[in-house]
Length: 228
Image (tube, rainbow, N blue to C red):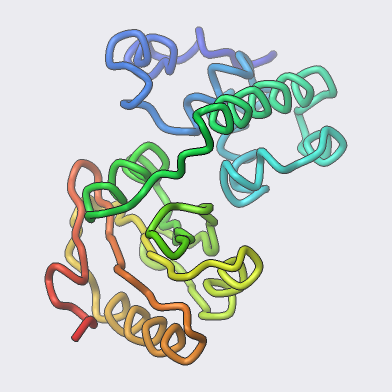
């Protein structure tokens, strides 16, 4: 038996939620579930969607995957793999068609709006690095760590590797608190201080660290946490 969206309670169905609240209100996992339509024996479409995103580490990495790589996921046949590849490629073309204007981050709210769809409903802690050019425009976003409900493990090497690879001038880091409380832990502050120090040495400054918790967020720089 395949577990389709229609077998979910109506309040949990991504299609109905999209119709009622719009695309901004649903997560990347739910959008992918709508695209897939059904799961597999013993696994709902939402579970399959989450597994796919987790396997690749994020939506950007998923968009870069080949059809062959997509087919490595159990329950994902070639037809659905092609469907995902075509949809993501179409989205990338739409982005490139917007006169190649890059999104410029000028406030913590911009970061929240950029990441809320992926982080606000996520049940695990994800740590994301936003790469910026010399004008503060977004080059790319990378998921560098996936943690548990209580913690996410971050190493400076994983944070700065994509920045070096893409020749970023600076970065902003962000992670979510599934608990819904945006207040940082001592570990959050220590990690931020370490990343700031490494960024200064490498010449790739950390502009801010944003915690996203449901409908709220916190800026380390605004709160003067770790940033002197």
